[in-house]
Amino acid sequence: MEKFIPYEKLSKKEQQKINKAKRRTWGDLSPVTRKPENSKAYNRNRAQAWKKELPDLRSGILLCCSPSSK
Image 1 (cartoon, one colour):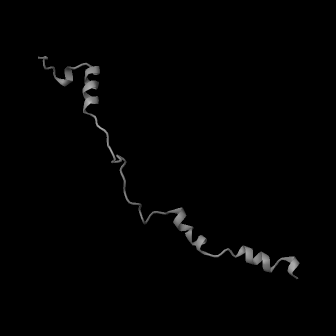
Image 2 (image 1 turned 90 degrees about the vertical axis):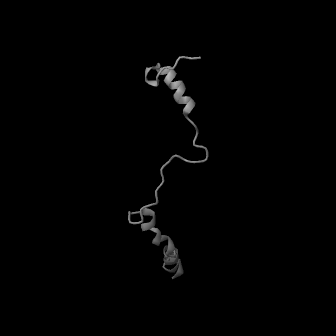
Image 3 (image 1 turned 180 degrees about the horizontal axis):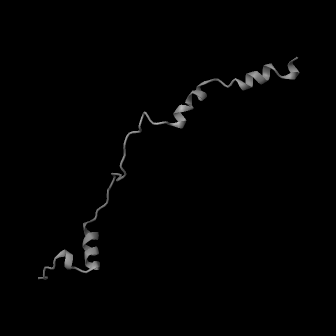
């Protein structure tokens, strides 16, 4: 039977062995903390999304006003 030695009095290597034996993996769970996106915060993509909804008028203007159509 081994003699009991308190954890604090063990050598660093022995403490590391015990710590490694206690560690486990997270499995399918991600340890990254997640929180919902702040809806009041400025979002550059959302602020400029209205531009994507508009039709591209530049191509129509170029066709109508080109010098070859006169």
